[in-house]
Image 1 (cartoon, one colour):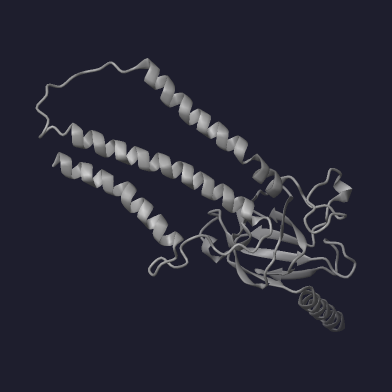
Image 2: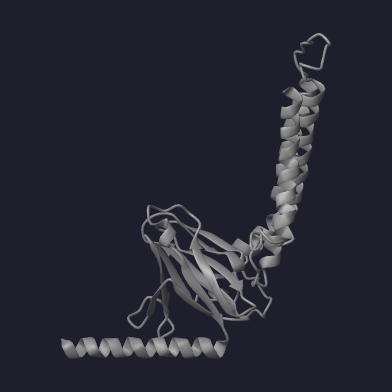
Length: 277
């Protein structure tokens, strides 16, 4: 039975790599199981980092699986007639297998610094061109056009009214329905009303944990129109599954028309309320 289990250990890396290749090739049975379509100009940075770490850990995974197979096969008690030998270990070997993982993690930490800076630190500035993402002073930063608030169990979305300021009476309010213009640098202001949430736009490679009491920002440049998912990537309670919204990326003309329609509905609603009073 010893060699049977060694073959089972060998099957782990073989099946693991096979499933990844199957999904990556988008073959029948695994269609749509790889990364969703990237529609963010800056998303390739995240994808490249993901593939690099996947390849690095994949090599370690395969090497570990093969080593386990070899030791189980070679030292099978039913086939090996040599006497048992005891060892007190090797201090040098312990140092090596402590240093190598530490060096690998340090390398990954340094390698990903540019990706982290682009996604979390280099907020677009108002004077920047299509690809400009540098800035140092807060008053130069591109102002958020939408405020997204996580709440059990929905995304509350607020657009500035005609005064252009978020937080005033003429704001436009939506629930789980986010509209944004294509081919424009967009900044979102995100916060939580109650517990930890995680604002996740898979097609834009955006994931931002939302912490109660904090205002956070995320930015991107969508380069393709369409309808995409908004989900919560943080288990936030019994209704976590309900926190699924819809992102509509559209032309600037369609976005302005939609926003104008929402303003008109808002004004009409306020007018009817005032008449009733």
